[in-house]
Length: 156
Length: 372
Image (cartoon, rainbow over all chains, first blue to last red; front, side, top):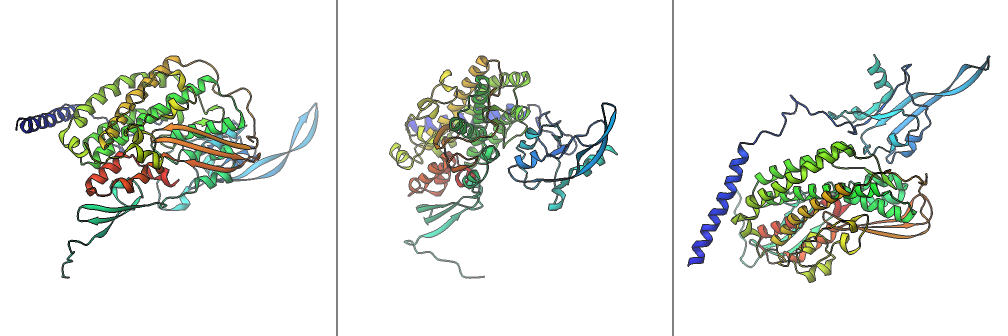
């Protein structure tokens, strides 16, 4: 009989302790942020989708070597280039040289797993992670990014 | 209106829990033969999110599989990637700088705490208490912020590389981790008062959901589930890997074999993980995070390699059979929850359905890891 009542008493006591903790927690400052009105700054290393980096002349750093394309586990990068002849002065005389110019750099973000292999494999510092995280759409096409187009838009 | 269905007293009926059911924490289906409230027979059905990670591991080059491993278990992803990089390093014979190994141990333990915290919240929610989940998520958020600052992502990290790390940790991370340890110790006391002592919670778990040590051995259960049944087995102690022999920590073992024992094991493990993090931050050596000599193309010599690590859910094994090319010939993943879950069929026979679901919560199932 005594054990029965002591169990009831201890049970009620445990509930009171729990309620006490919840009550104390009630007066703690709010830790959440009302999202669309207030946002948190992304950390410096945050990995969003990739973005091309431009040099001083406003053209992409990319030399279209295709290392990122090969490193990607899911094959979401596709790029194309054309060879352009240009003249350069070597030891006082003009010479024509060929170089590759990027004409297309598409990212299929639907299959990207944000592993960062492409950025790591790049030897020319041509791609970086964006801080973009507000990506939502009901259409698949919205996640097929034309990164060259995006670079032009950022410049203008 | 149609006529009411009459069930004869000796008749059983089939109940489908899942594939979409909040208690199963994912797309797991349990076919239960019920006699009223009691389970006569249960059968777990898998394969709803099978993604063929093992086959992907055979079709892709070694570095390309790196992001896959964090998709197995989204709560404790770093433990799984740790196992993978250790296995490939063993196969290819890559030396890892000490600093990188220390950082790996610290981040894995942080991730283990995050995983256990989330499990704690979800488990209490399974039993009908919602508030502890919010407290647990608040504490977990600190860990995710810390890990995001160094790894760049919040859940599916791709941080370890063969031979080292993606990037180094900074002073902010060390300061945040040092500030977090006393904070979580205080929170753990709070959880003890709020949940562990609670009479309703104890009545739901004490002596319920028995899993004997014998059954654990039969099904190959590991991790907190086995340690709650009195089996003192932890890969970190029994087959030490990485820098774990340098740390001083205990393996919590309980002999009650019930759901409460498994709960207590995980709560104590968080404290032990904090001890490891504390020691790791103290002993953290200076130096590079990537080895000076690293093969550009990873082609392990012919052979059979196996590496087991202790993840938040148990012993995770990875077997790589190499034929000397840049792809693995066989890539086998031994996931802990797969074995832990299979005990459910046998253990829940004769139990009431609510107790069985409470026991399922105490097994800490993460379905993508079972199906992988």
